[in-house]
Amino acid sequence: MLEMVVGGFYGDEGKGKITGYLAVKDDADIVVRAGGGPQAGHTIVEGKKVRQVPGGFINPKSRLLIARGTLINPEILLDEIEQYGVKDRIGVDYGCTIIEREHMDQEKADLVKRVGSVGTGTGPARSYRILRTAKIAKEIEPLKPYLTDVSAEINKAIAANKTVVAEGVHGAALSLLDYKFYPYVTSQDTTASQFAADIGIGPKDIDEVIVVYKSYVSRVGEGPLEGEWDEEKRKEMGIEEIGTVSGRRRRLADFNYELAKDAMNKNSGTQSAITCVDRLFKNNESVREYGSLTNDAKAFISNLNTFFKSNSRYFKGISIISTGPNLEDTIDLRERSKVGSKEVTEVRTA
Image 1 (cartoon, one colour):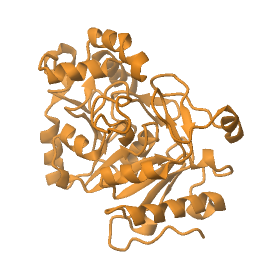
Image 2 (cartoon, one colour):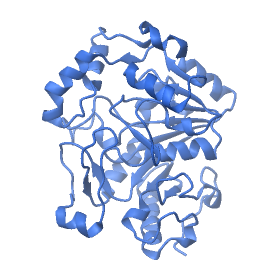
Image 3 (cartoon, rainbow, N blue to C red):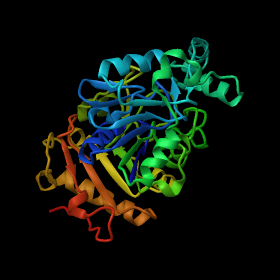
């Protein structure tokens, strides 16, 4: 069983928490990080943030893997391995591209100002990979205790019917291949098909694609943002956010249905998780039962569920609703609606 978590907007959707929740709730044998680099940070629970270690580290029984398509800053990775005490259960693919100082300098000199990059060197390092001049993980001495063939491990786990959670990065609208937002995009494709390639598996090995959406849209950096809130609207909503890695104030906007539909279809999404429901709809913080949500929140979820079912080929239902920063602040609809089986039912408003 392989569950893949991907972003539906511009990143910042709350994929880290959803990955952590699945790792714990589904008792994942393996959690694998696919794509991106240290510019893609995940907040798993309040106070626990990672930029390189997979978000499933929160389950002490899960094997943690960093797939070949991920770029590595050894200093950041080794610090996180030590900080979270995962040295005995983490593996780094032999072929991960290494970010060097010159890559960070190049990004800061150009991409930070021009397209809003965060200066971690990810884009230039990826270009060196394409030119076949990049260093890879097997050449870095401090990484040698952790080196493994991630593709081989994952394929063996799938054949043995083990539970694997794959953690994609960014969001579909930041895909390098998306003409609508180019050049204000990241340095790779950011959809499930690319993450499968990053891990080293085929598309048929993915059982569920869980597309994560925030209840509103947020974005760090330059580029278009339809329905962006002005200062008056931000104050009215009482919502402020700071980027996990950039430390910059996130731009905010209304939920974008067309963007959401596009992401669901590009990812062949089978489920979705909706986060920050408590922030958009007051009096829903830490709610853990669907029936206890306020009527406006339930109407939003129900309408969104119907929208996706009407506009997506593989979608079976909204499966997870996040109502706060901690893992326990979660409504899991998978048992109730039997997402993943033929008995899927509508999420109801009562």
